[in-house]
Amino acid sequence: MADDGYAVITEGLRKEYADIVAVADLRLRIPSGCIYGLIGPNGSGKTTAIKVLMGLVRSTAGSATVLGQPVPIKAKDNRVSYMPQELALYTDLTVHENAQLFSELNDMEPSTFMEREKEVLQVVGLLERKDDLVGHLSGGMQHRASLACALISVPTLMFLDEPTVGVDPELRSGFWEHFRMLKGKGMTVVLTTHYMDEASRCDLVGMMHKGRLIAEGAPADLLQETGRDNLEDAFMEFIRRCCS
Amino acid sequence: MNAKRTFAVTRKVLRSLRHDRRTVGFLVLMPIFMIAIFGFTFGGEVKGVEVYVVNLDEGAGNVSYADLIVANLQHDETLNIKEIITPSSGLADPVAYGRDKVVNGEAWACIVFPADFTLDIVTYVPGNSSILDTASITMLLDGSNTNIMQSVTSTVQTSMAVVLYQDIGFTSPVRVSVDMVYGDDMEFIDTFAPGVISLAVMMVTFMLSIISFIHERTTGTLARLLSTPVTEGEVVMGYAIAFGLIGLVQSLMVLATALILFDVQVEGSLLLVLLIIFLLGVGMQGLGFLLSANARTEFQAIQFIPLILFPSILLSGVFWPIQAVPEVLRPISYFLPLTYAVDGARSVMVRGWGLEQVWPDLVILTLFAAAMLALSVLLMKRR
Image (cartoon, rainbow over all chains, first blue to last red; front, side, top):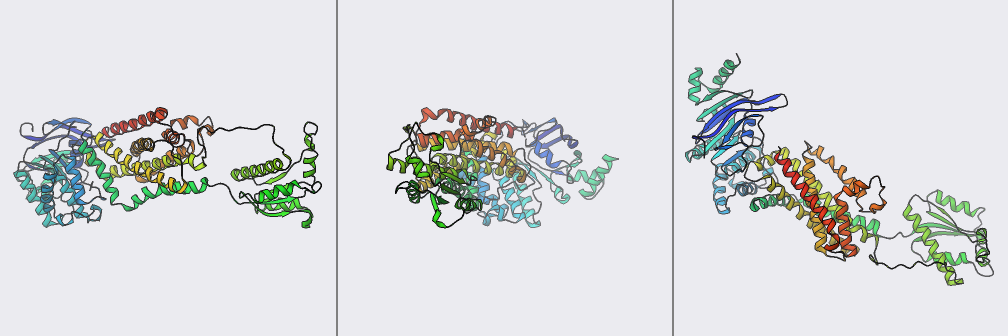
């Protein structure tokens, strides 16, 4: 169960690599059942923050809980799913074989998988290509296959690192419909993006700059606070405020 | 440990291979190629070695032992006598002519019978003749290949002994009686076939493991696997089972090839040989994983391959015994897992030993495999 209605809580979370501070004293409160966007330019610490929350990288300081369990979670379960920024799929396996692998690793029953696979591949537009090797797909299709593998296990919380990079606008719109549908079922979606127009589709946005969370709130509130009419300008305003 | 997740990892490794025909070809053909090449190269006896004979023997009465020995040598397949030079050949210096042939690389040896060869034999009186009175043969040898050199000298000595025994009943006062405890009718290939099988499996599992894991790390798939409920132990075990199975299939292919092409001996239990190879494959997979952690790219990873393979090939008793390894290097031999796999597989295949004799090898290989797997899990957890 999530703590007090929060799927993710972090307190003073910090990650340093040699003399680089990738994440600095991150304090997050991500409510369950929302779409939360971590936005910021490349190198702002979004991916590192997600990797720490997934237990893939150890934090230098601070604490975090994911679905009520302290990170790194000792006995992981299939309630949390992760789509990394890089492809991270087996290019020498087919789309179906990759999806099946991730379903098995998430303890799904074969019958549930069959149904779920069809549904998910339809969402990402790869149903017709499910028997193709991932290595034979175009870059965009590979990215969609990666999203399909993250969606396959019907998790409670999803971390999606740049899920819409290289995806054409029509399909991107389909993705967002699916995210909203997942949210409707009570799922929490935490995604990173550097597309500001996408960030406006999130329920809540956390703006990151040089490892720090410089602003957080609903897109409309952030626009109002800065008096700007788009999130890109609002983001620049927050950078100006925090660095001045 | 969850068996379903473990086997999912195993199936993933094997499925990847199914789509990669070139790697499957490599896995199947490389060990067969190795045993075939080694078998044909070392398994055959030395035959058709080009030699020249300078026969200056003047004989005694109407007999010439040199003629008889040369005739005997002509029937031996080891030597290919290119020319027999006699005083009637019209050469001013027949010995220099024969030496030139060896010097020029046209022959491996020139066998010179002196003029009084037969005379020295017939006038030899045991106990009364000095060493200077004994008959002698001079061999001008190209010793650049010890195998060939030894074959030529032993062929000539055998031929000489046969002729002298048949004609004048001369025998050595000492006879060595050999009673083969193991390895009766054994050829060289029987000794090294167990070694080559172990070596082939070791090479392939180690290479495949180190490359697979560096690929898993650099493409992010390992991190993604570990983001699911699968544990580090299940990933390591899933891989170990897959690589152990690959090793088993390979050893069966190599054994079949060795049996069909070279009729190698398998005196003991084939299952025991396969168990030894399986443990070696699992251990080498673990070692490959551990070393892959110290490499950032595939190029860096392959630099470890000769570092492990060369000492294993040279010091593990694959081709020559550990007793032939210099003492200063012998601790390395005892440190190499291949040493125990070769010893175990050879003892089972040639000596026909069972579990009650080869258990020490099995214990060491099991400990090696267990240690490698445990270290792999620890390393994965430390990420």
